[in-house]
Length: 549
Image 1 (cartoon, helix red, strand yellow):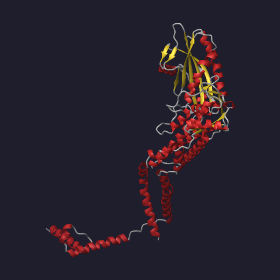
Image 2 (cartoon, rainbow, N blue to C red; image 1 turned 135 degrees about the vertical axis):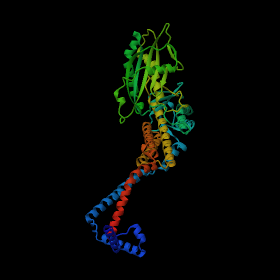
Image 3 (cartoon, one colour; image 1 turned 180 degrees about the vertical axis):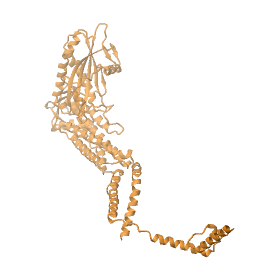
Image 4 (cartoon, rainbow, N blue to C red; image 1 turned 120 degrees about the vertical axis):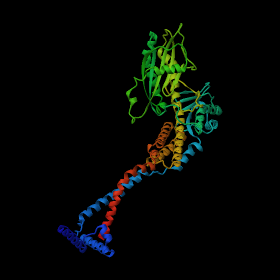
């Protein structure tokens, strides 16, 4: 009982001490029984105690000035790289740069060459032989008659200085070119007949020039070989495996005959000014062709099956920096006929030959069995003239529908190309190159005008300016009656090459394949994560500067 009493006294004293101590927080049930004024006083005292404790905490250490300066330098360095290197690089790579083009000059060239060309388009100077018995008035009358018939497209200048060929009058049935002399089928002292013969001589040339003015007609070359190319001609004598001794004699004479034929081509100074020709010869044995009539496709397939390229010189496989060399392969197949063996005839060909486009040609030479005739003479009569005609067809710049049988015959032993034909083809080739240059530049100006995303590098503008200058120089050389044919061909060819380089410059289409929005889409994912810490660092630097102030 005494213990119970002492316990009660202890609990009562504890409650008394708790009531007298305001610093001890009350329980939830106890606070609910306390007076509101007492609770507010206790909360205020607790808050004051918290503030006094916080005021007694040590102040944070002040950042040294060296650290602030270092952080400021790093942040500003990053921003300097972005502003002075990143942004210019981004602008350079996303901006379409367009150098100014000479649009007015391009239009004037197109007018001068195609739309409203200045006549004549080409001129040719011819000396007059004394046998024609033409005085100054007679030459003027013959010249006027020829130019009127040619429509002013080709200007014939009789007696002009710098003539490369001389006309002679005679009673021949056709026009004959004999070296540097052109013999007309016109009597002496007949200006009208001389003018008509000259008009017939250059009629296909004038028709070709007129055809190139038609914008619907393409001006691209039908063949890969041009007058100004380096050309290598490979001559192959193909014999059947069962060739007789007489045919084998032709094989023995083949290299010397080819060398003599090519020596005549090199001796023609007029043709040598255009062409640089090398050659080789070989003999090959194959299975015999089928006797009788052959379709051109059969002969063409046989040409493709014969392995004729292993002997070609290594210089034809030169690097891209070396000048290109066109390869022409001429093949003559020797066939012996007699008795039950008929000759081989190529359907639709009077010369028993075919032209393999851009590659050369094949001739079938039928020889009677046991013939002992002179092999060299037979080649000059039956083979080499056909080679010359095939080679001329490969070089001809005349458009389809114009090319036909030429209005003259070349006298003397056959040669690969004569000077008179080279001059005619040179004038046509030069003007065709001018038309192609004009149309290429006009197309380029239309493209860059219609597509603003096409870049125009300064190098392209320089190429266009150079092409225009070369084209005007070539046009002036074509109209000059002096002997400027080779120079005109080379100037016009250079203008066309420059125009093609400008049109197909790869730098112009880069922005078309990689538009600006694609570039921005690539840059933003790279720059976004870098920009956020840079902005935070810049904000901190600005705060430091304000605090320093």
